[in-house]
Length: 87
Image (cartoon, rainbow, N blue to C red; front, side):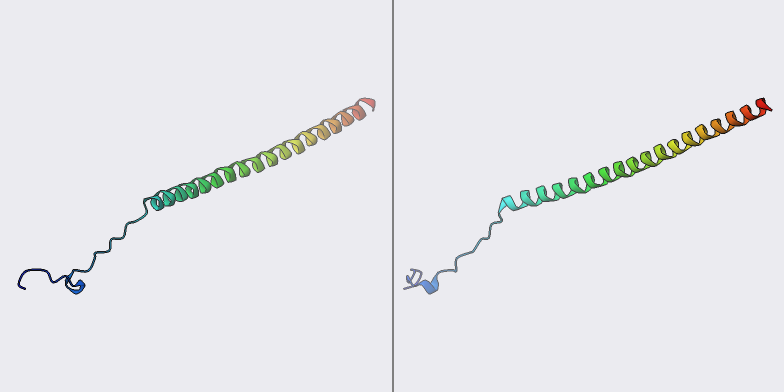
């Protein structure tokens, strides 16, 4: 008796359960977060270019209208000069 173990399972301390985290899940999370940040950045960069392209189209269209108005104005001036010279 005394200090000798009795050999019964009830006298043993319960086993300590250790839970280990998977180290790969943190890396996967970091990669997903990085991909999301890159996707958002790409969206904003291409959106700015799209707005710039639309502004360029409008500028070219306005320039074309301006050129056409100059041609019509020059033609009208030439016609007026011709009429003045004939009279």
